Image 1: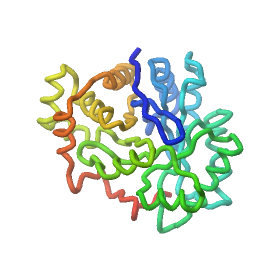
Image 2: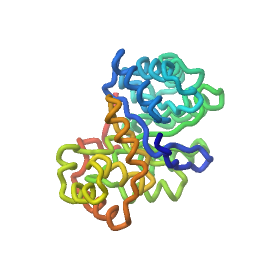
Image 3: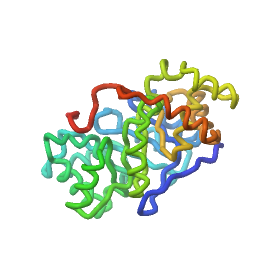
Image 4: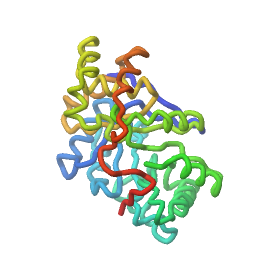
Length: 279
């Protein structure tokens, strides 16, 4: 079983370098994929209220032979539940659907700045943590100004910020900000525009030099930058391949060459956190 490096937040909380993304994994097949991943060595499983699969994820974790205490289960609070009269029950609904005594890590999915209720949502997460409903709290798709406002108004800084990050959108400045403040960076869609990206000459040449696949090369790039990646993989074969990337060591020049693939229009879709609104 691959031994995974871990990355640590300002409060000592740590995440493994590679976790399992579950968007689109639903029902019995989805639950079986989660069980396969956990028993295959994954110790981080990521879901969200809006993925509509918390039940399958919870069942998959419960059915695994692995000790539940070893697995970090993440979920996310949706934009329509930010208000102080909605966030508490939304957090509880996620917990019940997952079948957990406490959610290991709960994030705000998007800041929805025009709605301007994300501080209320954060206060609800702070309260849930104090009550033991969730163990650790963080955010997703937040910009530095959003993070600073949370700390300024509540005194609590997130341990994690899950953001779009891949070679076409390397987020170098954002990553440096997280490092400076002890916030773990998680990458959603870590393989970006997979087919196009994985055919890049830079990626294929580095992969050939190390005797690995292009997806493993990109995941190894994330590890080298101390970024947690959460690629989705439904089959045991792909799960094992992704996890094995954690042991691949790229040199500084290779990391820099992959980072140089970044594009001004590198986002996967029009999801700028300054304007994007999630329901």
